Length: 136
Length: 55
Length: 222
Image (cartoon, rainbow over all chains, first blue to last red):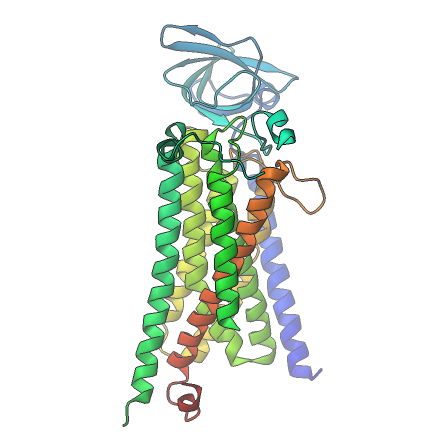
């Protein structure tokens, strides 16, 4: 290969590696700030001031959902630690026990007061009744 | 594998309330694709016309 | 050749869409809103693939100075922007019934928005230059630098906690999507891929006309 082209290849590699390392450093320093939510375990290990608005995510603990008028309370868990959430409002259709959830709000006295509740679904897609599929 | 899960056309359009989301996405995607093809085809035609004109 | 690709992929795309949207069972959690997958996944997949193709063209242009690859970058950028827009739009609409929100600043959504803005930036940057050759060179460098974003989009759901779920189809593991839903999805990806290739072919023709209109051979090309 002629030397000019070789030089160009090197400069492309150089620029690319340079930008990769630059972006990696930025992402590395931001690290947990790029997380969309805290898990209950992370919440326990970090000291978060009570009035700070945060998001926590995890699974809705089975059997923990209690409705009281328009108010709903449930427990978010990552199966190591868990936290009680109180929310006044309408939860999304996909909100159910044993499925993923993200709550936005603030922590006070170990209880999380949510302003907004989002459902998080996983990567599994299946028809509701597997037997129907096997028949056809 | 090819079973039609809806009882009627209305139900297929309504989809238990999710029809509005599904069908609006279908419409927007279709519109954007047709628009893109039309846009480039018309541009191409204009260029060809210009070159075929005697100077 | 172009016509065959076009009709073939159009047929596959429409067939898979009808199959996926009307002739599959609903999802056991999401119900009918999951059907948006047949439009969202092909668009998201192509939004990243187009950028990768632009990066390859940029490398070819910078090393060998092949003019056609510079035209290809310019031809692909608006189509990439359109496809990324479709991915963002379909994702947002899907988010309303499933997450309960149409927009959240999680890593996957934000990095895809950055990709969309990058496409728009590249287009407007080239338009702002009067010297085409200089613009081509600058554009190619920027495309290569911006390529860093593609693995970030891809890996964002694994590296950080996101609202967006992780991938259902991966190279290493068994798909976590039922076969009856998977086949139309693969069909829609292949069909959309072909349609986008056809779009790129016409738009690169437009680019060639635009840039080579003073050349004498262009009349024979018409």
